[in-house]
Figure 1 (cartoon, rainbow, N blue to C red):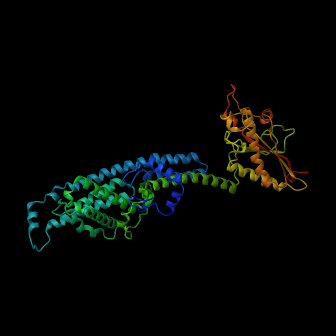
Figure 2: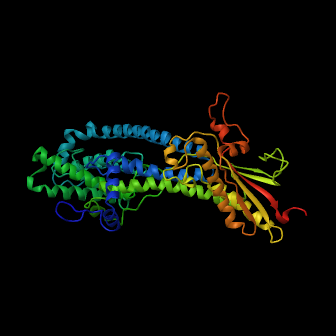
Figure 3: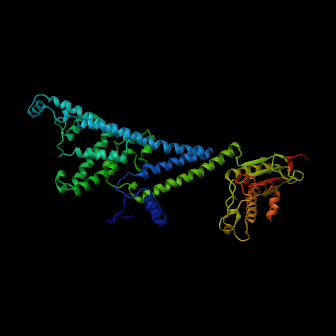
Length: 512
C-alpha cells in the first residue's frame, strides 16, 4: 500500500504486504472485518485491540483447555465469568479510581494558599540578592512534589490496566499544555514548568521520568511544527485543533510503546501481566513519529482475522489432545458402547445365530445430505476422533488373535435412524425418500468403519453388509425411535445411529 505522497505506508511493508497483495479477496475480507468492529478513526486506541483481539486469544486458550479436558460446559462458564465479570468489574474499578484521582487533582489545583500567597511572600519573592532561599520555595517544592507523585500514581495505575488509555492520553496532553512556556499559571509563585524542573530529579532513573521526558520532547516538537502561526495563545481555533490532534495521536503512540507495544498494549494483558517493559533504553520519541500497524485498518482486520483463526485452531488442537489422551490412557470415549458377550447386555439381536461378541460404534450426529451425492461425505457419516481411536484399538487387538490357520472373521453392519432428510435433492440420484437416504447413510457408516478395520487387520477377513432395501435394515435395527403418535425422537434415534462390529470367528483368542 502507498500513501498519497507515493511512499509506502508504515506497517504494511514486508511479508504482510506481499500476502495481502497476493490475495485481493483476503485484503477485502480483513478490511470488512476491521470496518465492522471499529469504524475508521484518528485514535490509536479502540475496541479492536483493547477488547476483541485479546478477548479472542483468551477465548482460544480457554477453548483449548476445555476441549482437551472434555469440559466444554466448564470452558463456556469460564469465558462467561471472564467477559461478564472481569470487564464490568474493571469498568467499575476504573470509575472509582477516576473519581478519586480527579478529587485529589482538584484539591491540588484549587489550593487557594498556593494560588494566592500572602503579600509578605510576594514581597520576599521580589527581593534581589537575598542571602537565603525564600521560605515559599520549600512550600512550592513540596506542592509540586505532591503533584508529580500523583502523576506517578496515575502512570502506574494505567500501566496495570486500571485506567482507560484514551482518558490517560488526554491527561498527559493537558499536562504538556500546562508545561508550555506561555502558560502564566503559577502555584507558590512558580510555573508548572519550573515546578517540574525543580522536582524531576526525585524521579531520576525511573520509567516515569523517561516517559515524561519523552512526552515533553514530543510536545516541543509539535509546538515547533506550528511555530509559523506565532504564539500558541494566539492560534486560531482550526490551528489549535490540528496541533491538539497531532499531539494527542503521538501521545497515544507513546502509551502503546510504554504499555507493552503492538497488540499487547491492552488493558486485559496489562491487567494480568506482572512485568512491564523498561523504558530507559527505548527510543520513545522516535517511536511516535511513524504510524503503528494497529492504526492501519487492513492490519487491524488481519490481526482480528488471525485471532478468530486462533480460536478455531485451539478447538482443533483440543480435540487432537483429547484423542491423544484417550490413546495414552486407554480410556474409551463416552460415545462408544461396548458389548463383550452374546447376551442381553449388548446389542446382539439374534443370540441363537449371533456372533461371539459385538462392539458398537455410535455416531452422535443426525444425518443430512451434502450436495454431490456421495453418502461418505454426508453429515453424520464420519467417525469422530475418539471413535476412530476405539476402532483402531479393537483392530490391533483382533490382529493379535488372527493367524493363517485361524483367521479372525469380522462382519460390519451399519444402521441409521428413521429421521427425515430436509433436502433430498442434495442426496443424489436414486434417493427418492428419507428411508432410502437412511439406508445409504447406514451403508456409508459401515464403509467408514470397514476402511479402518481393513487397514490394520491384514491377516483377518472383514466383510461389510450393504443394505439394499429399507425394510431389510429396519427389520434388524432393533429399536423403535418414534413416539406413539409417529413423531421422530432424536433421543431414541441415537440408539439406531450406530455401527456394529460383529466378531464371527475370534481366531486363536478362544478355545478350540
